[in-house]
Image (tube, rainbow, N blue to C red):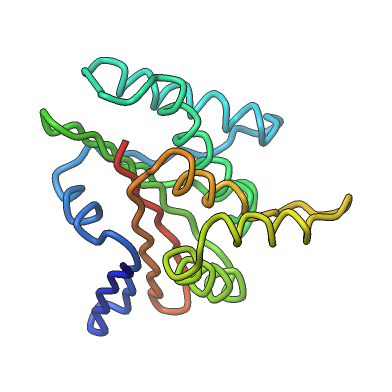
Length: 180
């Protein structure tokens, strides 16, 4: 069932399991940007490994390979859709003794903001198997975005997700929160 929380006073729309985003109020937070000359995918791999190492300190129920896949998917999406390659990502991580949460925030352009907001609603209102097959059929050799990763997180990894869309004075931010 789709859960949507709209906070007009803060120009924020939350789609998905909004309780995940609320859990991250007391989290470890840092900002990380790619270094000059570093490849985009090396950056994603290094950052994903770092975050997975942090969560590896705790007893997480989920398989470590699944945790790394989820983290990597969130990081790669944030890098791929950021307004530019050198825009820093905001990362929030929390282990509260029972559950682990990750939130990745990036700045995007307005068109990406609107497209991704519509897509996140679709993720929670469409049969994921059907959506997966439809997206597979749309992929062509030149495509740089298939939108399949988030479907896999929900369908194959049963990841609890939440999306936050924030517009701050015509700066557009997308946050994806996951329960690991």
